[in-house]
Length: 394
Image 1: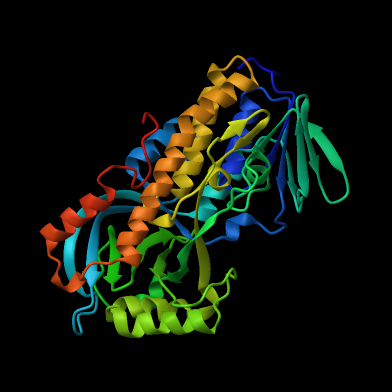
Image 2: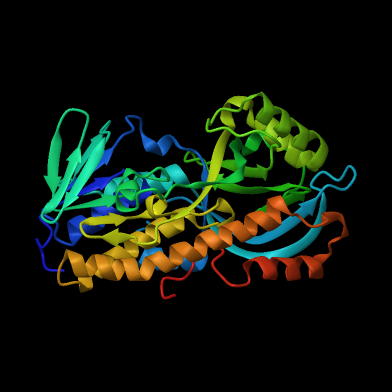
């Protein structure tokens, strides 16, 4: 795209997708880029883990959207564990290749934030109250004023205001079960069991599963990052804080359904470091229309079972970058971006629902599974591709 074709762009949201989009838009020649981030605290404090498939990572490194200097932990294999008597880790049901890198979300964000040029205006504590799109631009309304931009990029998450404007009435659908998340300093677990380096653990039980892997802590040590999915009968919440029902369900799972080591991992994480994540399914039929464009969770929210949330957000930006480079103007670039990414969003939400059904809502009898049965079961769920993210060429 010729330098200066887009006079001004507002990026709503300053998370991973928003920072990456700001970098790409500035380099594509937008004369003014303003990021509106409603949070006032540093986003890098978010301590959850992000798993990135090595093939997807290579694509993102080549696109300049992941920095090789960001610390990461290698994963090589996935062990599927089930509770079996007093075995600390449990019985290994099967072992599968698992070529992923494990990052800390905050480390990825900090590296992208550092790449945002000084010419880009990054406003924290900037809450967007509404937008009004017309043929000649988009008005962005804040708490006290309004500004006009040539285009708006929505990187404002699962409850996206930009998506609401582009697709009125399209709302995220609850998955019907939550995720509990936490990260425990590795040294708290010393001496409990021999859980080998490079192993991602899938700890399975009737009605849910636990995913565990190590991530860097940013200080030379490691955290054990975990996310647990399970139903909580008759209860729903929108809070990140555990209420009595979700605390009781977590205690039941750690005490009765998980092998001893994995239950102890959750207990030693500490209650103040555990939070709830509500899960949704939603994907925009169009990722761009007129002067509005969607990225990341604003465009598609797939259940985290796909192992591709942050990857897909960065892939969206990578395709936006190539679309801007090949487009004669904003309209043609946005159309090319939409054509490439909207089908991927549909495929990823479908994959998330399939994986959620098999891993949470209708789990097999794990105690009768062997390695061959596990491989066949997994192939039935994920064999169409997309786990860890779909390749950019697809």
